[in-house]
Image (cartoon, rainbow, N blue to C red; front, side, top):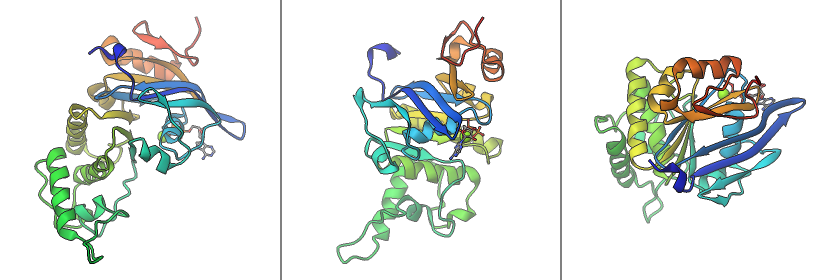
Length: 261
Ligand SMILES: Nc1ncnc2c1ncn2[C@@H]1O[C@H](COP(=O)(O)OP(=O)(O)OP(=O)(O)O)[C@@H](O)[C@H]1O
Ligand SMILES: [Mg+2]
């Protein structure tokens, strides 16, 4: 694909944030194109979540700029981020366990009838539409989500995130709590979202997951970007070398955190 001639959905330039003396994110750059999955990799404490929380408005950056569709975006809280179509699915699934999928989809933004009562029929119909697109085998619309499998819960969480016109989806460790079959299911969801043109930042510890799903990866170490590149231009060992040693391979573009020499 001719990514170069298109405008990135997201460009984060020269982003920094520090906590006390710790430079959690240090002059980081990352970008994302429509229909693309960009994996964000790095050890514990590398700065992945901080970088992405700046995009989702959860953290306020100390420096740097964010561009959405080529225009500078002003994101200083989660509401701002949502207004740019940026939604997040967290590792700790924030679902309401005791209600069904439709209620979770509309949690906090419930549809009402013109008499001011909950419009359950419309919410369920809409839930069936969204879930049908994401996970056509899903049938358990009448059950509380606590009864669902991890993968099914994850599809409800993703449905909730994309339902309100998300163009950019942030997934922070989406498979951390899931078994192999459910991880595969999330993989299918990611492919579906990609084909809808949604751009996805996939944050993970699991290099195998990322290699299977991502088009490109950006690796961070000690708050800095080691490098970015297409998955097809790098081996897993090379990416491991980026994560562990900060060594940028020939197939990737080095960042400020790349080991010198
Ligand atoms: N709210 C906070 N207050 C103080 N320090 C923080 C805060 N959030 C993150 N940090 C620090 O910033 C650094 C980067 O953390 P971050 O959570 O971004 O790492 P990560 O790459 O997501 O790691 P993990 O793989 O463990 O999720 C760490 O040193 C962390 O302790
Ligand atoms: Mg994290």
